[in-house]
Image (cartoon, rainbow, N blue to C red; front, side, top):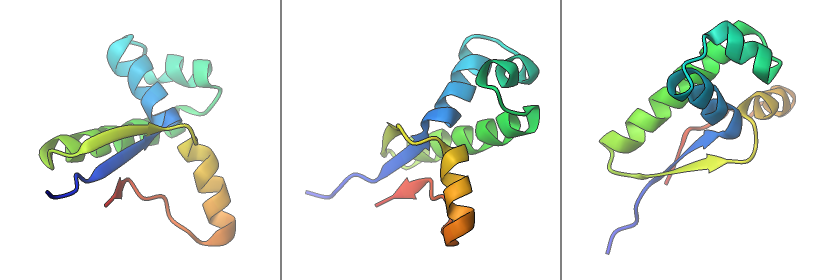
Length: 88
């Protein structure tokens, strides 16, 4: 039996998608609610939507990480690591 690939979205990507796509908020409204810039919300939406679509197209599992992507990016900038959306 083969393993199913696991794709992960950060909790902040998920929250941005929930606020904008599910609740119908604008990016500006979501940014105010999340206390980040509108540009950050836009990046979270782009990355989160891409990861969800990739998981669906790959017939893979999808999980929501409790670690925010924004926080991960801050840590990565000091260690040189990049955020990965897909994991095998």
